[in-house]
Amino acid sequence: MGSGNQTANSLYGNSVKRIAIEKDKSIYKLNRAIQCNPYKTIELLNKIVCSKEEYTKALQIVKDINDGKYISDDEVVKAAYGSLIMSYNSMRSGYRELDEKRKRKIFSSIPEVVLGLSGAWKDVKIINGDFMDYPQYWTAGRDTFVFADVPYEKKKRGANDGRKNAGYICDWTEKEQEQFIDFVIEAQKSENPSNVMICANIPLDEEGNLRDMESDYYNQRLLKSGFRLVVVEKRNASVANKRGKRKPVAEVVYINYHNILGKWSEHEYYDYEDIWKEV
Image 1 (cartoon, rainbow, N blue to C red):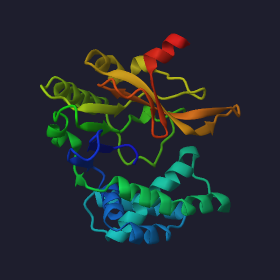
Image 2 (image 1 turned 180 degrees about the vertical axis):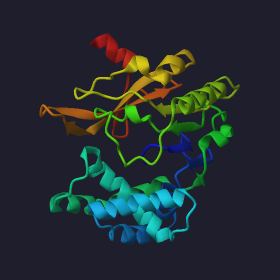
Image 3 (image 1 turned 90 degrees about the horizontal axis):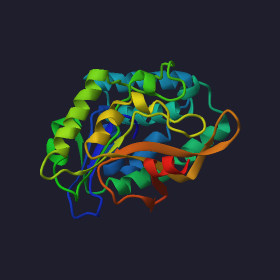
Image 4 (image 1 turned 135 degrees about the horizontal axis):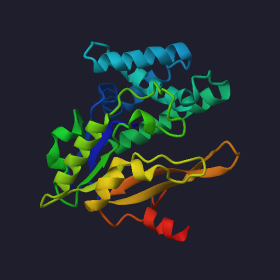
């Protein structure tokens, strides 16, 4: 759920122990609440107030809990979800008050979102920590899947690179990005590397094309270490750009395996090299 979330999971059902590692304490507590008591969590989330003041308060709670301050679990759960939905719906364009239609849509979807996540978290061990402290999950063999959605640099946050986005609670420096890549490449050299998917630091422009590929640390090193670039397109969703055209919602990822192309669930996977050849 958002940048900084790292999971280790099985691609092939429940035969392998399933692990999720989340460094952000607020997201960890939210996911544990959803996992352990989804119906109570739905009641809590329905009490969220969507306003600029509540958004600011939620972000402060998220910061405080990650700084080690004591805050009740109920308050943390509300703040974690509230900061996520308000950031997604408002902060990316500078905070704006949500109209009633948008608020109704947000709150009407809470039961579906929570119950869906509750099912996904079933039998998953959720750990509050840094995924680089658990190298055993990166070298567990090809029946284990590792997904990493790591923090971006400030300048790699989309079309409006220069704009501060308070929806993110942390950033990675160039040095931290390089340390992460060193970690991944070292795991890739092991006798039993896991299947790995990593969100790329490559933004999409308004037409849905990749840009600034040459400046991406991952592109320069991972493609030389057994990874390839894949575009994941969500088939049932699209967004409008400034020209009023609709384009699919897509994510750019690196993978070190070769059995994912085509349709899976509601997503479509494309090898970027194949797309490039067709252009």
